[in-house]
Amino acid sequence: MKKFEFRLRRVMDWRRTQASVEEMKLGRLQTELRDIESRIACARAEQSDSERAILESTSITADTLSALDSFKKSVAAECTRLEGLASAGRRRIAQQLAIVVARRRDTRLLEKIEAKKLAAWTGEYWQEIDRQAEEAYASRNHRSAAGSAPRAS
Image 1 (tube, rainbow, N blue to C red):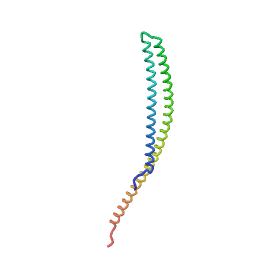
Image 2 (cartoon, one colour):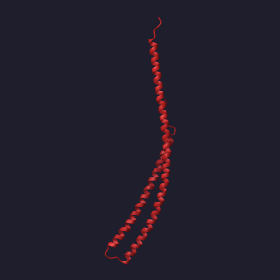
Image 3 (cartoon, helix red, strand yellow):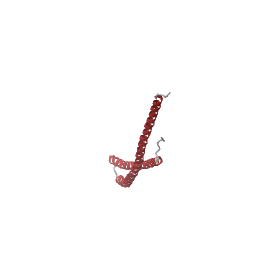
Image 4 (spheres, rainbow, N blue to C red):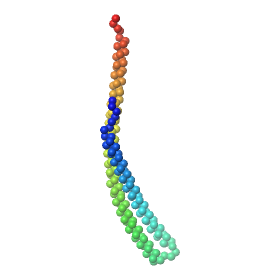
């Protein structure tokens, strides 16, 4: 019997490669989002630290308060900009996740087809082995029966 061959192996390998590429894209998008969220947290922490430092100082001038107010507005604007980027990043991640799920589904479909074909081939293989064993057994019994038959003199 010929060895098992899955004719769609190259297609399945290609689908696996596509899934890996899309997963890497998803990972990159997730890293970008974490970076944006980290930048938002740092900006807010800087603002909080600045407010605390000014409030803890012994002398607060109008210029200091004006600078703090300008800094707060600047941080708020930057955070708003970064929140927009984060929101867009989340949308891209959702879209990319849908692509990854589709690629994985395509790959799993081919893997299931391969498993079914392998199971069918394995069943046929063992049937062939059983058939050959039965033939060998029958042949051996036939020879031994022919050898033990009385000979005509």
